Image (cartoon, rainbow, N blue to C red; front, side, top):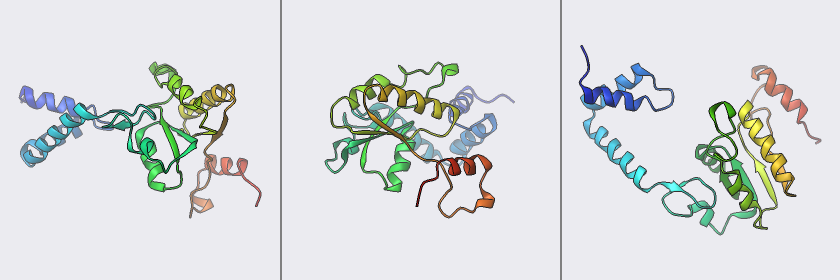
Length: 198
């Protein structure tokens, strides 16, 4: 039996979500229509509202309803430190840790030439303008430790150092409370390489 066109369209639409394949999308669509039509309505309204009001912050490029987001508007943040992250999710994770009180710049991705994502798509020009304002003293590169994240950090490091900027990279290593026997060899190797004096 073929699904009604509207149901088929909903299933295809749900597949745009990460890690959602055809069967998961079908289960979600059927659940919303069969068991939670009120939830489906809330979801539709929330998506429509978000698409209408969410934009990029003019300073840090994260998502915001205002031209300048709450973090960039805060007078309590340290203007001399700028942390560069790949996504708004990375920014939220750092904020939840409450370990960083500087400013941010969100790339909205990472260098990936095979996917057609280069410096222009990641707004490196806006980042360079941001650090040229004279307030930023250090840029902390907090891209993910993937091939693309490392390439992005390397490229940005070279670009920013050429402009006289102090650049650092977040460290890799062992998790707090972790035990050596449970750590993968790559993490253990990196922890040894990046060891520091006590």
